Structure formats: structure tokens, C-alpha cells
Length: 264
Image 1: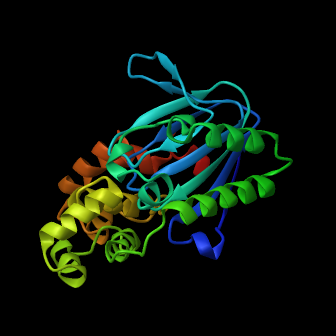
Image 2: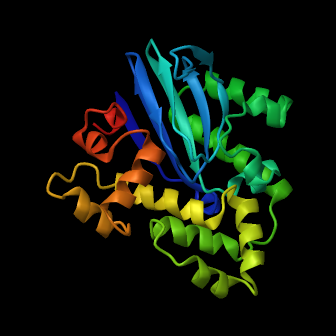
């Protein structure tokens, strides 16, 4: 399996965290864990099906959005595949698609349902592109074109969103509201519009991601990991990690869960 990341054009760094490419000559089961950020996904070789708890499958899209989510899901393909993802900041949904972010929270809409004929043309060009460099160029052209239509002056809440992501959820919500807004109520309302989550839930998922990034550290206990990642105690850490990953952290950090295969 091949995994690589590419950083975006500077003009897009306020909405794109990075591009990622995943390719394999074999089948693969992807564990999708809770994430405070959405992704724009394109399959240029093969297509994943979503696996339900009872083992049945639902066909996935060729191109679409994996919205920011507090849920866990699994996706399976039985043959080789190639896909490219655009890992977005949450505010990309309102800025690029003109929708409140919460309209895609815990959802996976296909691109055609959001953009009609424009989506179909983009899908075809991505599918027939000669390589991933050209695919990224096409995606960036699309994003810049959409921003020219919908973009407005950047509100202060964007800095608060970035701050929570960068600190892995260890910012004080009250302090962020006081820094950027006249009232906490105004902050809460705009935060939800641009992220699809309350600041509290967004911060919990960001803290969970901070813990996940410690994968591979064999010399740290769960108690130490919990405290270093801002959890009150180990029990709180295990509760949140299990909710947002679907498995006990001990299983995840063992490398035997399947959720970390792409990192190996």
C-alpha cells in the first residue's frame, strides 16, 4: 500500500490542510474514525462500499464529501484501488459549497448531489487524468473557482477553529469566545455554522486526534498518554477514545485493530 501527502497552494491553505493519496494493488478495509474536519474524496480506480454492523454493504460514491463526523464507519474494497483525498478545514464547506457545515455533519453526500453538472465534469477529468499531479491541479482549479464565487471576508471564528485543531482541543472555549467575540452566544452560533459541531464536541474530537497521533510511541502508558493529551484521568480518556474510534485505546495502540494499517 502506498500513502503520501501533498501540501496545497498557498492561496488554499485557509481551507485545505493537505491532499493525500492512497493506492494499493490489493483489497482493503478502511476504518473511518471520528474527525472534526471533512474530506473531499475522489476514487480514480475502484470504489469502496460501506460496511454495516450486520455485514451488509452499501455502494459508496465515486466522488463526494465525507463530512466531519462524531461517528465510526468501515469501508471495504475487494480489489486494488486508487483514491485522492482533500483534507479540509471545516469552514471549507460553507466557503466552497455555500452550505452550513452541519448539513454534512455525519453525512457522506456524493458530489453530484451538491454541484450537479459541474461535479460530473470534474469527476470525468479526475478519472482520466494522467497522474496525481494533474489531479491535484484540477482540484485546486475547482476550489479556487468556487472560492471566487462564495468567499467572504474571513470571520474571527476561523482563527478559533485553527487554534483548537493546532492545540488538539486544549484551548479554553470561554477564552476563545472572549478573544474573538463580544458574547459567547455569538461565538457558539458562528462556530456551529462553520464546523457543524458545538465548540465542546469539536474540542473533544480534536483532543482524540491528538491522542491518535501518539500511535507508535511504545514507551508511554495509557495513564500518561491521557494526562499529556489533556484528559482529566485515564477513565475519561478511555471513554472518549472508545466512542470516537469504536475500540479500546489499548487495541488501537497495539497496531492490531486494522485502523492503523495505512500508517504501517
